[in-house]
Length: 317
Ligand SMILES: [Zn+2]
Image (cartoon, rainbow, N blue to C red; front, side, top):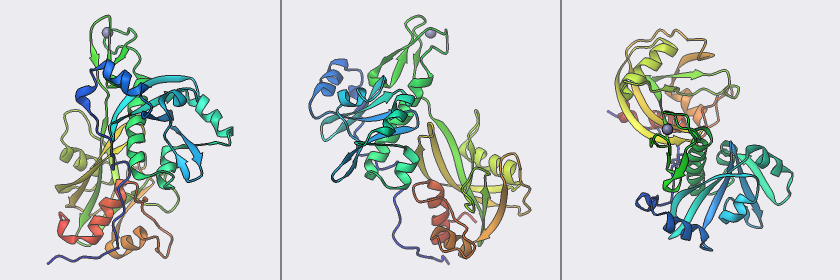
């Protein structure tokens, strides 16, 4: 028998509603990209490190500039081709982070970090996903200017989706860091942890980077055992989320707990403990008597936890 606990309409998972067609097959056509960028319909997001520049307009905040206007905001770095939106080119313009921070003084602009823009709902959801794409790719460029093979400066090709080394001919591609994020469950209980850097009273899923030579399932079991001392069996994949802080891919899972005595790794977590479904439902809906919370809906942790609370049939244990 499956039990359902309905917490109402499901919120959207942040950074996933990307309406841009990546048009990867056109990235090698430099002339096409140049014409696209010069077209009056081209638009760009302006990103400087963690900061994003938004225009104040009568109808709200607008993250879109012409590519030339975006490059004029501060000292420009790379411009990357994100893809096509309604046939027009959509780009990401990298800017000097200090120069972008200085734009906070301007009355006609709003400068903020992407997390705050997402949590506060300052732009439409499809912009969030496109800005995430731009931010992660521009971060890679900012830290990979030199060939990892021979040390020579590399050049940008393929609309920003590759850097080539003129000396040793090595081709370098943007990297993402896979991270497993998971909820260990057993019957009516689930395991949540707290990192010291979390907001007070917030508890979340455990998480950690996938290591070389490791499957997703192995990484999930290892991280839960390392951080909380819990042995897990069956692992069920839930969903994934691009997480551009700076360039991760969050891989969400549920895990079947086979042991119950928690040993917290204090170097990773401030605390970890078991919670029952009713308490977690109150935390998700911000009505917990003690003020405890889960991460907001923009984060996949919210959805991993919520799905376990709402749909017992999907639980691995
Ligand atoms: Zn090289």
